[in-house]
Length: 290
Ligand SMILES: C[S@@+](CC[C@H](N)C(=O)[O-])C[C@H]1O[C@@H](n2cnc3c(N)ncnc32)[C@H](O)[C@@H]1O
Image 1: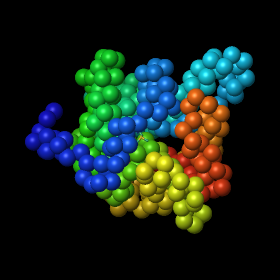
Image 2 (image 1 turned 180 degrees about the horizontal axis):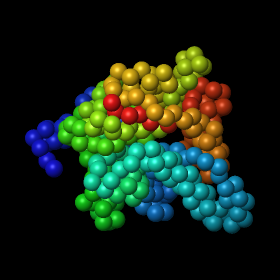
Image 3 (image 1 turned 120 degrees about the horizontal axis):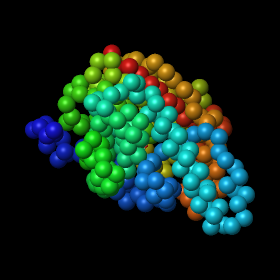
Image 4 (image 1 turned 120 degrees about the vertical axis):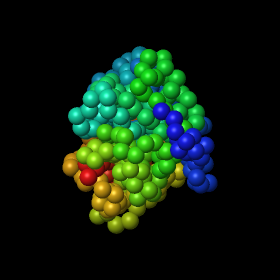
């Protein structure tokens, strides 16, 4: 479906110098931890994993086999995170549409489609990611239902009230929450479901810790405090129905990843320190659009 509004939004995917920098980052990004894991089953996730890890992968004697097993185990944990999010999108039918805000290389929309049979529109500020994800959907034969767009998630140009569910998976730290939640509230139909998985800084710690600041610098992002999510949701007709602190569940993933010499990016110990010193939390928030 293309409307005049669609076309206009598609020509202005970035709206600030900051957003250009974020787009440059994701257009250039080729980390093995993102690409090698995705190649296993063509589900490309750019988020972290949850759940208990199978530590026997580290005991493999053959270095090559050990590498493969570690890669597969990290991918399993990342996919478990995507499945958890998809399981909170509410009852969806194959006729429903869902909106994946900040979709990366597309794994989240595919996961939601495979689970619910629904239509999905993924949006990323990176033209390269959108093209890559569309090619994956084409190869999988689901491009009639799963589509990716090079657009700004704050101003998608999509039709108001057309979506039964929407989410952000580790992409809220790139935008102002009020602008983002206003767009979700506009796109979701009344009674629609919004879900977010995100790292946030813990208000009880005080301010953002040194580790949180290092993570911001590493990814060119701006991690919000936990409190801000609930304030901004309340201001934008999003009423939380379920909140889960996934911090403990995320630690095995980071412990395993820091020992994966072929995949480390250098930020692993910072995440573990931030989680353990209480300054940083990994949260799932599910809300109803009222
Ligand atoms: C850490 S990745 C997460 C990708 C995906 N949600 C996943 O779980 O695999 C962050 C994503 O947010 C996107 N992003 C950042 N700012 C954006 C904006 N203003 N509009 C659309 N996408 C944006 C980036 O292009 C990137 O795809």
